[in-house]
Every structure is written in C-alpha cells, then in structure tokens.
Amino acid sequence: MRAPRTFLAVLVAAAVTAAGCGSTREEMRRERLDTFRSVLPGELLAAFDAIEAETGCAAVGQMLSEARAGDPRLDAAVDSIMHAELIDTFSDVEVVTFFWLYFDHALETGTVRGP
Image 1 (tube, one colour):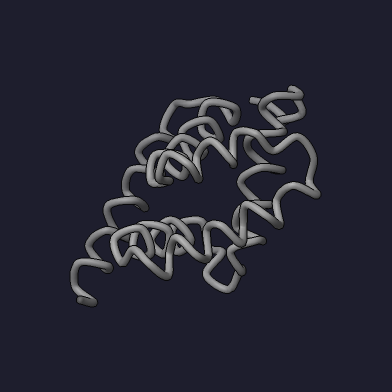
Image 2: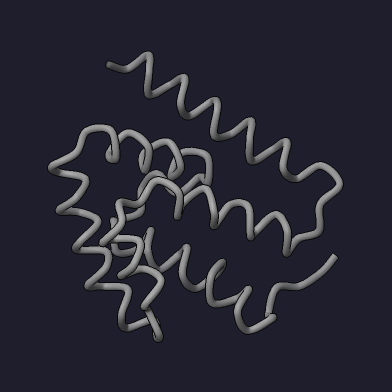
C-alpha cells in the first residue's frame, strides 16, 4: 500500500510544481485549493465551502477526520496533499484551517500578495 501512496504524493507534488510555472501567486493558490477541494466527498466539500469564519474550521476538521477513518482512498489522497504542502504534521483541523485561511479566505478577500 505504500507504493501507491508514494506515487500519488509524487503526482500531486509534480502537479503543484508544474502549476507554478508562469502562474501568479493567486493562480497557484487557486490551483492548490482546487486540488484539496477535488478530493473531498460531497457533504464534506459543502461543509468546507460553507465555512464563514475560522471558528468553523474545527467542525469541518472533525468531519474530515471521520471521513478519512472510513475511507482509505480519501485518507491516502489527503495524506498526499499534506505531504506536497509540507504539512505532514498537521491535524485534520489544522489542514482545514490552512486551506480555508490561506487559500479560500485569502482568495475571497483578495489578500493574496502578488505577483
């Protein structure tokens, strides 16, 4: 089972790296956010998209923990994204907070520094 995880991690890292070539910081963040969002199951994605304040991240992080525990494919995908983002030691709440605060919220509020 380790080989598919490693392959997936390399694939995600390559996609993140390739996405960065010639892109603005905002575009790169959008692509990285979309990569994270693309692995979330429907109900979890809807909950992530409904976060309105940082305090909402805890409940969604708990949902992510429960979903990962019951779905090895989701667990592997999130693990690969965490590895590519260099956030391997983050809890699921911290992962959700990271993607909401530095990606989703920053893009929404226009606080991503350029270029």
